[in-house]
Length: 426
View 1: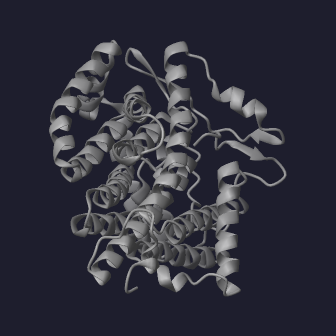
View 2 (view 1 turned 180 degrees about the horizontal axis):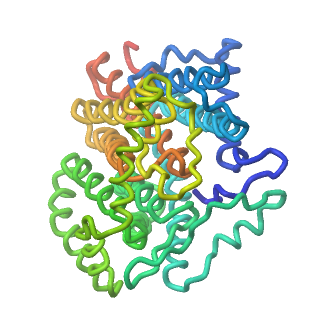
C-alpha cells in the first residue's frame, strides 16, 4: 500500500509491481520449503486455504481451456491477460498461505498488523494531501523507485459533485474506499490491544482510515464502512461498545462539518438512482453478461480475457466479470474465495476465548465480508491493492481459526505470545 502498484519493471511487464513481485517470492519460498520438507503445510489446514485452492483450481482449468483453443477467445492480448491473472492469483496465494503459517499467536498477529496499518497510513496520508492541496505526493514516491516505470491506469483525482475525490496510492477512489474500510476493524483491534507505541497515535490512525474512506466520496466505500462497523462493533469489549454508540455518530457529524459539501455530495450520490450514469452503466451490463455466459457457461472465455473496446462494456462487478471470463466454475471459486474465509473467521470469533482473539477474528471476518459485498459494486480483482491486501485477511482468518481450534482442543485459552504447540499437555 505504500508503493504505487502502477509502477512496474519495464523489462518484466505489468505483473512486476513491487508488491506483486514480493508476493510471488513468498509463494515460491512457501512452495519450495514445502516440497523440500522444511515446512509442513498440512498442519495449517483451514477453510480459507481450501477456498484459495478452489479459486486456483478454477483459474487453472479456465486457463488450460483457453490455451487449448477450446474457448474460441485465444488471442495474443487475451493470453497475456490470462498470464497476468495467474501470476496475480499465485501472488495472492503466497500472502494468504504464509500469513496463516507464520502467525501462530496473537502476538505474531500484532507484529504483522502493525506493518499492514503502516502501509495503509502511507496510502491514506497521500489521499489526505491530494484532497487538501490537489497535488499528488505519490509522484514523489514514484520518483524514488529507480528502474520502475509508470504502466498507466492511475486515477488519483476524480470530480464528484462539489468535491474532488482522491485515490491515495491506489488506482481509483473506489479501491481506496473499500480498502480503507477493510483496514478499519484491524486498526481498531490494534488500538485497543497494542502495548507498544502511544494510544493517541493508534486511535489517530483509526480516524485516518475513516477520513480516507470519506475523501473517496464513494458509494462503495460508504457501503463498505457500514458493513465493517456492523460486523466489528458487536465483538468489541463492553466498554468499547458503549463508546462506539457515542463516537460513531459524533465522528460522522464532525467529518461532515470538517469537509464542506461532503454530506450533500454523498447524499446525492447515494440517492441518485437511475439518474446517475455510473449506476445505469452497471445495470446495463447484466444483459450482455448473461449473453456471454450463455455462450461459454462452464469455463468462460479465459481468465481476464474480456478486453472491451467500448468503455461502456466494462463490467463494474467482479462477479459478472468472473462469470464471463471463467464461467460458472470460476464464479463458484470466486464466491468461495471471498465468502468462506469471512464465515470461518466469524465462526472463530463466536467461539474464541478471550476478548483479544475474539476481536482479531471478527476483524478478519469484517474485512472478508466487506470484500464480498464490495465486489458486487466494482471489478475488485482488477485493482492490485485490493487484490493483494485481501489475501492477508484470508491468512489472518486462517490464523484465528487455528488459534481457536487449539483452544478447543486443549480446553484452555492460548496465552498471548505462546505458540499453541507449547501449551501444557500439547
